Amino acid sequence: MKPSSIAVCEHCDAVHRRVHLAPRARAHCIRCGTVLYTERRRHLDGWLALTIASAIAYLVANLNPIVEIQLRGESTQASLFQALSATWYSGAEPVAALAALCAFVFPLVRIGLETVVLAYLQLGRRPPALRAAMHTLVHIRPWSMVEVFMLGVVVALVKLGGETTVIPGPGLAGFAVLTVLLTILASFDPDTLWENAERATP
Amino acid sequence: MSHDPHAMLTARELGVLGCPICGMVCRAAPQGVDVECPRCGQALYARKPNSIARTWAFLVTAILLYIPANALPIMRTKTLFDDRQDTIISGVLALWRAGSWDLALIVFVASVVVPLAKIAVLVVLLLSVQLGWVTGRRRRTRLFRLVEWVGQWSMLDIFVVVLMVALVQFSTLARIDPGPGAAAFGAVVVLTMFAAQAFDARLIWDAAEGSLHDD
Image (cartoon, rainbow over all chains, first blue to last red; front, side, top):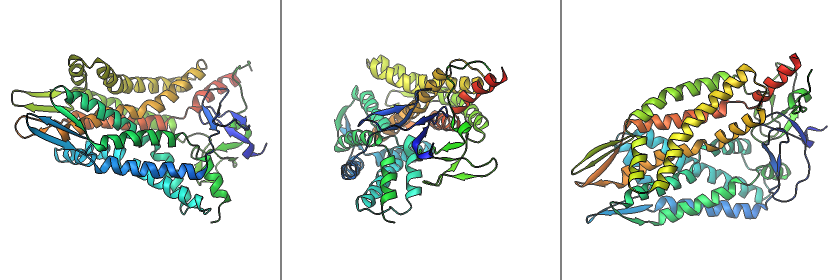
């Protein structure tokens, strides 16, 4: 058997012969049930369009206040950056740093790298530092937590909703759209990127 | 050798290595020779090096920090009439009393059930591998996948604190500050995620193979 014709289960080490899958189908390990590989080939241009859309949603989400609250004539508002700096200056620097990495830095790196890699491939060229980019994308995946942050916003708003007037800002819509786009992007199989990179001129 | 209904040819027996980063499969080298993935450059191992010791190290640290994470307040609310310190549990109870039982349930699951269940499952998985359990391999692998997937949702309370601190800053009426429990809780979430990443689920299946060969 040629190594390229087999798939190895990452969770139980069982060897499977690769088969051609129907569009959007997933191959599961017959021994332990883990997903082996998927057939989610996308055209690069559609994929690139989605990463650019998520870059725009990211900007809208971060440059605008997420929410404004009013209490007896006084009002405050917070964008993600204001929330992080308020936490930092109230003495919880580790908490602010952790939240900054998971909600701000890693999603930015993820969107940026994916956009650059796809833009090069779309032009038929092998992206520079492709290996480092792909490694980074795999490693930061579990730490990029836009969807968890989104749920955190909902919980915070309900907690505040009882005693204050809550006015959603454009940043909230930005985060909602970003959550949806990143969830779609996460379902794409990076194998497509490697295959295109191998065909591309260096 | 007894018959194992789950017996399958493994990559180790076949002499190949799957890349954990890009999924490519390539031939293993003789023992002691390092192999790099030809496609992405990742160093390849048949099993994650020192998986059990590293998982225990992250897990024990997480268990120790779990105590201050729950005992110390994660949020301090000061109003004109009140100065209240909330732990994770008292925050859940406050949501419950405010009538949002659905959100109270979500926060309770994300902040209390998930971290505890993750720690418990990883302890059971480690012990099962070290004691060489043969039963329930498929079920244990499924538990591990669940732990891997669910990990990041425990960060929920950290984001809630960060937002509340920024929003509730009314000069005289009310202000919220983060408490020392928040950093400990964040550390628990990060450490349990590291522990899950350090664990090698293939060991669950190796243990079974070993004991079957001994029969």
